[in-house]
Image 1 (cartoon, rainbow, N blue to C red):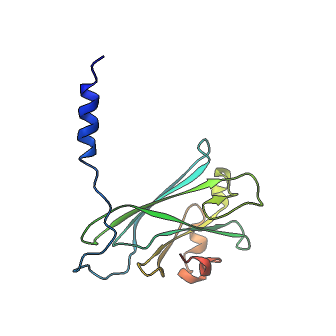
Image 2 (cartoon, rainbow, N blue to C red):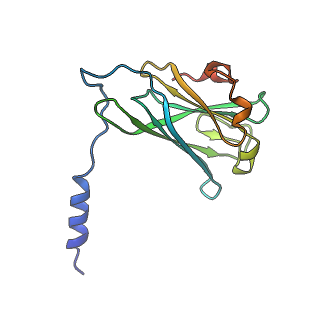
Image 3 (spheres, one colour):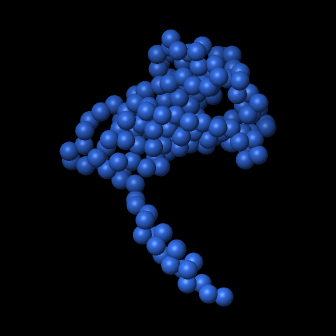
Length: 163
């Protein structure tokens, strides 16, 4: 068995991995991150919701808040950096929220809302700036129009959206 092609592929692939910058450069443009894109899906087989957000500049994380009725609200600060431009001009963040079956154990990154709940959910996504303050919020999902007139701080539970 000849392993050379696999070995060369692995070695070549390792050279393409670039570390994610963690410190802003000295000439970093100070800006408040805002959403440029937000995509989400629910995978019942994998038992998770997955979110991917693009931001206009570096962000300090972020996440989602959701509710069916406005009384029971879950806030999940799960956005982590996947890639970011060294000059601070954009960032891609991703986060997963696992689906649990025991309603007594929701926590950050674990929800009782299954994929079947999607049409009923009011969903709100938020980005944090580099100091950890809520910088941008966007309603999304099937019932986003019910939230369109709210500001970032008005969605129930957003006061807990801190690092």
